[in-house]
Length: 381
Image 1 (spheres, rainbow, N blue to C red):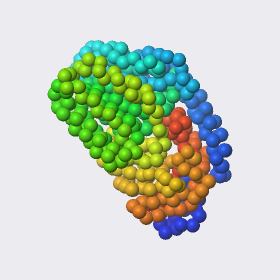
Image 2: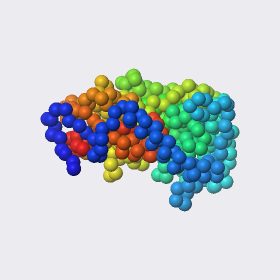
Image 3: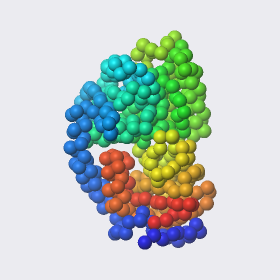
Image 4: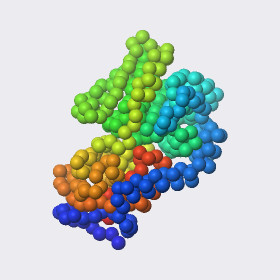
């Protein structure tokens, strides 16, 4: 049975995310979370090892092959993972194969798994087609289970067409990465706003004039400057333009590896800015939307002192996932939209929410124990 809370209702209400079951305390939620993660990862083991041992990810008729090199001793929390996207695109398969082989040896982090996937197609937009997001997500899940990587130390990088892909994928999947480095690519229609919580670096030859890549690198670096000036707690970035270099930067961009290695993902940022790309995503950090969202729809929300402040919400329906690392679920939670309080009350931890989110990403950082549903400006359960 679902109850509708009126906008003016500020009594001590309880939201249980639509699941009728006993309330969990913090300790119980932690134990159930650990058990759920272990269970879903065990259930995924066979697929993960199949992917990892065959060095390929499949989606329908598409195949994304990959090669990798493991370097250094494994840290306590697992190896770092560097996903490095090759150039090419819009050309013959053998040319893209050669670009892939080049990428395999292009960078050499001292610690971690350096992995170069081969794009599933040979199209001009080979790294930002509809299927790529799901295949990279599958790759990361496989690496978590089969290669013991640290989900908080996953990095994205790419050169030329791989740089195009980094420009596009980093904002779409920023919740998965600790940092991203774009080399010699073109931004296309990417949105920088989604990079609030993902450190992002741009590397470009000053003479790389094809498609105005050099000019755009400067423009997008300046835009990131502006975003950071307006929001100093976010938009960590660097812009490196080498005046003397054309498209090939003579390995000057390899400094990106050291820059990324020093960074660790924050999967639970206290503020999220999410503008929906034309490749739609249902989830972004601790926010989620149902199917049927529109390209360009924006959500901007923050959490502080048990207050969830939704500054902008273009979606009529919004889901907010919570846990005890984001706020104190033992105390009442206040929800504000557009400066108006729409809810204040206790929110139940739920085993069903834990199980749901653990299965989604196999990632402790993106596993939650409570859920708020906001529909047409009201909190419901």
